[in-house]
Image 1 (cartoon, helix red, strand yellow):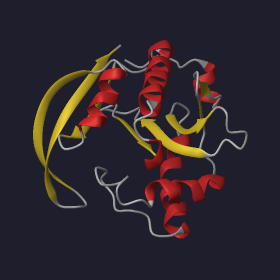
Image 2 (cartoon, one colour; image 1 turned 180 degrees about the horizontal axis):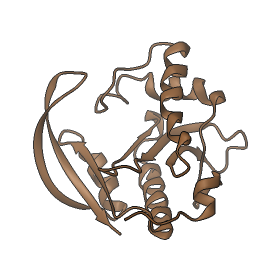
Image 3 (tube, rainbow, N blue to C red; image 1 turned 90 degrees about the vertical axis):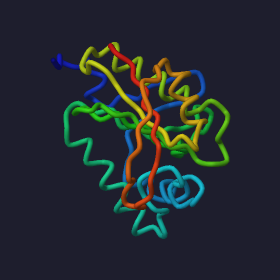
Image 4 (cartoon, helix red, strand yellow; image 1 turned 60 degrees about the vertical axis):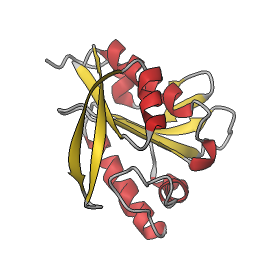
Length: 182
């Protein structure tokens, strides 16, 4: 099912949009990761607790960066194009193994500016061009409809809702599932 990826997907060249640069994460991003994922409100709908310190941010970043061990990966730090320091303001990832799931997080002070939608569109465009994945899915908690809007703006289509006991928070959640086929 998987075809060879275009060389720039594998080599780690950034994805560039009108306002964003999506680039590989590095160990130097730990403080920005702490700012993003250390915010209780930002991780409210994520399967994790807020990071507490730089040590936990480094551990989380190391776990994320394991994706780079695969030649093919779609893990990017999201940066504003007009920021010369290229500070990470969010992350986006699509798993390259089934179920090919996309997830994204944006720093809270930048919510509702279309950044997640722009990043998602760009990554899905890259995947379509690379012709390596048959589809991508994404889910959101029904109590977080803004995330569903991101999926719709990126061209994904609502499929169904389902209930799950969500770990590690051990709470019941109704998820809404979206999908895009390539």
